[in-house]
Structures are given as structure tokens and as C-alpha cells.
Length: 439
Image 1 (tube, helix red, strand yellow):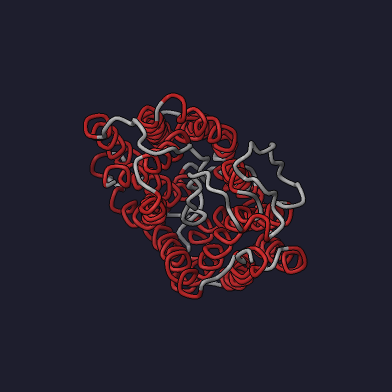
Image 2 (image 1 turned 90 degrees about the vertical axis):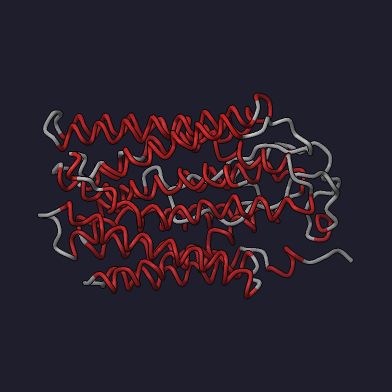
């Protein structure tokens, strides 16, 4: 478990460390902010397409092999990203070609890095009995959340000008960490012969601060007595027909997740550039990695507070978590848009992250509870695809609007949050109906 936890932790921390230095790198390259955000789009699209494919292949080709493939994709991607950005910052490559090469190198993570998370989850599920499975899967899922805290905290310490790496230091350091994890994986992880039935599931891309919540225990075929009670099809053990995004049972949750996900992606796209602008660091981008890291770290901690503290403490159901979270996020966006110093920016971003830390598990749980047990694998794939789809173009759109006018960008985000609140209040099924026991 410690080794698998490390695999997930390294990839999540590496990605958030990259996010904390990219605004400064873009400024140093004199590239428009929107192009930095667009450089992630192809990788996000590949994650949406490839994650379900790798999840299925892990069931047939072995989980350990898919973990190794995913880690290799992460290592190669991070190393190449650091190399081409270093070449651009050093003048060996023009900014245009450095950014094109960065987007191509980053796509390796979207295409191949997406193989690791579903394989890790299925490996754990296949080697733990039902009584221990939910706790084990929750521990693995928590590594993503912890990684989003550690990554921004370590990134400023990895800016190594004395080695000539500068702002690209975090890329090289996390590629090295990934390589160490891959060697340990190959040498120490037992064979993946399953002891219990399990299937790989598509996993959310680690673009946001934390995952969509702890995974549900959907690895057994027992009949769910709640299905009939809440109007889901009976006989869940029978083969399920293919689920579509907008079929009636899923439509309210998918629409809420898609609109709210776009709002979250826009905030993530804007936040780093906002720090540089409000603190006057555009002329000294190397100094921006620290403040950006502090802001991202505050958001990650707030997300963990929501998912590990508020949801279980107040026993929030899917509808309550979704609606309360999106309203908290809207308030945080308004505060973030008005912030003028590091303290207020960090506070605003933390409130935004707290809200989305409630919202995302809410829509994830609502989607899961809306379908039968036999359809859980498909439902989790839809959740992952919706989460990934939000990051294809929304960050770039948010940054473009922000560059036109601060309040144009923040105004659209607040409007999206309010749309989710209004539409969700009318269409999302009541928690009492989703979670009630059968008579």
C-alpha cells in the first residue's frame, strides 16, 4: 500500500508543481497567457479518451504492467517538458517552438500517464476483501489530495538557478522521483494475480485540486436493495446496456458536473496569472513561483478539509454537497476577483476550492447513486470523462476573458456557478430519495 500510495502521490504532486511554475515560465518566455493554458488542452483531451481504454486493458493485460506504463509516461513527459522549456528559457529554441514542443511532450502524460490510476485502483481492489476494500481505496484516493498540497509546497524549493535549471527544476526533480518510484514498483510490487474480482475504472485527471472524492466500493455483484426503491432498474447483476451522458437518470448530474467543472477549470487557469498581476511580479517571473505555490497549496488544503472533514462530519448527501458547494465557490470567486494582496488572494482561492471540494464529490456520488450496481463502471467512466472534458478549453477561455477584462472572466465563472445552483435546485433528485433504504 505504501508503494502504491507513493505512485499516485508522485504523479499528483508533479502535476500541481508544474501548474505553480508555468505562469512564471510563460511570462519569462513572453508568451501570451492564453497560449500557456491552451498547451494543456491536447493532454486533457487525450486523458478523456485514453483513461477508459487503459482501465479496460488493465483487466486483460495486468495491473502492474499498466502502472509501469503510466509511470513511464509521466517520467518521459516531465523530463521532456523540462528540457524543451529550459531550451526556450536559455534561448536555444524560440518561445513558439518551445511551447509547441511542451504541448507535444505534455500529451504523453495524457495519453500514457492515464494508464496508472485505474490500474492502481483495480490492483488494490483485487487484493483486498470487501470488509477492507473501501478503506484501502479511500487511502489510495487520498494520495491525490495530499499530492496537490505537497507539489506547490516543494516547487519553489526546486527552482535551482545554481544548477542552471531555474524554473524548470521542478520538472526534472519530479521526473527523478517518478523514476525512483518506477524502479521500486518493478522490484518490490508483488505479482498482480487477483485474489478477489475487480475491474479497472477510469479515474479523474489530476488537473484539479484533489480528486472527485473517495471511490465507492463497486467491485462486487451483490444485488443492491436500494435500486428498486429509488427507481433504478432491478436485477443489477444482469448485463447493463451502454449508458449515455444525457440519459434521463444521469442528465441533471452530468449537466451540473459539466457546467460547474468548466467554472472550476477557468478559476484554475486564471489563478496563477492573477497572482503575478496583483503582486506586480510580471517583470520578475522567477519570484512568482513561491506566491503561486502558496495560493495553490491553500486551495488544496481547503479541498481536503471539504472532502475529509465537512462531508463526513455533516453527512452531506449528493444534492446538498453539490448545491452548497457551488454557492460557496461563487462567493469565493467574487472575493478572489477583488483581492489585491497575497493574503486575500489565498483566502479567496481557498474558499473557491472549499466550494468545489464539496461540489465535485456531490456530483460524483449523485451520478453513482442514480444508476444500478451493474452500471457503476460505466458511470465512473462518465464522471471521469466529464471532469476531463472541463479542462480541454475552459482554462484557456477563462484566461482569455481575464486578459480582456478581470471582471469579464470572473463574471462568467460566477454566472456558471449560479446557473448550476438554479438548475440543480430544480432538477437534482432529493438526497432522501437517492439514499433511502428499501422497505
